[in-house]
Image (cartoon, rainbow, N blue to C red; front, side, top):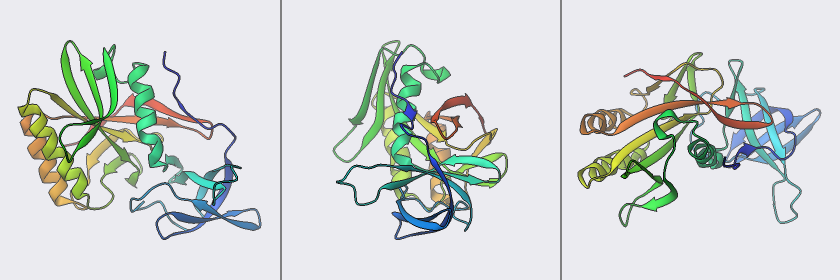
Length: 236
């Protein structure tokens, strides 16, 4: 067993969202006080930022930190959503080491952050049955329908580039996977948000045809820890 787990070392503090601004800042109301929290998510966070949404923040008393609080979870449509994108690879790594992903059980090697070429590195290079496999993790937080997770939440040229490079990896003898890590409590289905990024959707279809495998796994989320829970269906 590998014990790296996205576990909060201290109890999270419940508050209400006032606003997010300059991408990295969020004003949070704690009782009658308003505190500034670090927002560890560079995405659009579409659908998550309504004023008075319930949130959970962590507190860090490190004197070197400018902001003592970090925004971790937002509650939308009665579902908890993990918004700290820095934890996505940690959650995936824990899942790989602990056989929580059906397609990647009993791996021989797991290497994080491996360069494929000078421009691109993928989140993981794993080995199974003497086959080397690149695995790219995409963090999913978009919830427009109460039972459907979607990606992306804004145009992602970087995401499109990764898809094309995964096709290139297949040509060079690797297997290629994209794991959509759904940090949304309780959803059963996932799809690509074609209306938000048509180019990404087109490249997704291209990659699928070329042999890139796509998986969506939902996380179990609570104010103590976040772990991979179960595979959910991808609606093409």
